[in-house]
Image 1 (cartoon, one colour):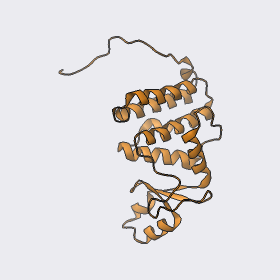
Image 2 (tube, helix red, strand yellow):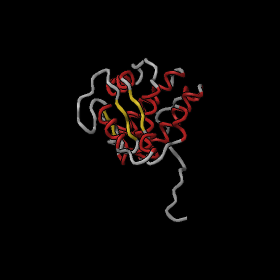
Image 3 (tube, helix red, strand yellow):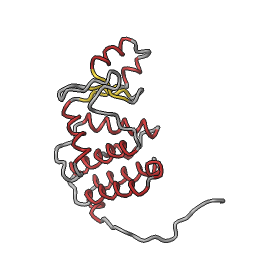
Length: 188
């Protein structure tokens, strides 16, 4: 075979034996690795990719099952920002209104953006097909708050359980950016 490569030797820089001791840790670590590889290190920015993945893997080594889920969603949300695919969760993409802290926003997978309820209501009047409305994800204030905290806190510091809407949004945003949904995300 031409241009084929084979790993014959490597140096282990960090051995995280704790990851293999809990199924959820191993599944989250696999999701992190596959996401980095599927996006080619975030467009070739391998130093940042390795730094973010390394910090999540370090935190995973001692995480409990709930912590693994938090770390997985934290990674996906941060990775979406690294790829430039993460939508603004504080404003409507259509009218640019600032979302009130208790407001509900709607993520359109078809348009890859978040909309306020007024704009979503207006858009639903002109929906071209049922698929337009079925690809919507609701994002309530608690989920938005969790995601905002994930932007600023280190992964080990966030202790609140992951809201299902935050998990679904992180996966939907990355699936749109990658053009596919990775099977390893089901473990997160």
